[in-house]
Image 1 (tube, rainbow, N blue to C red):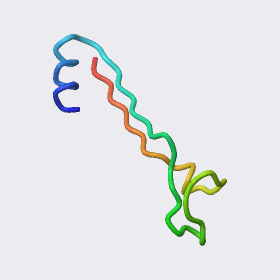
Image 2 (image 1 turned 90 degrees about the vertical axis):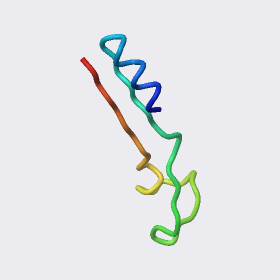
Image 3 (image 1 turned 60 degrees about the horizontal axis):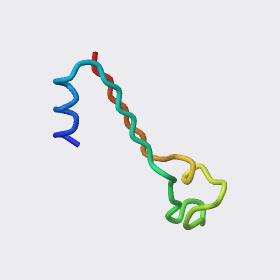
Length: 52
């Protein structure tokens, strides 16, 4: 990722957004896994960068 972002900054403006496919429940309120309607599953990693 570092090399990619360094390369982008040399080319002007850019926007990068990274998201995850899903979250997982690891014993949250007794739930395990994915495919359930629980906040632990809906909460996925997210990152964004903006360079101007």
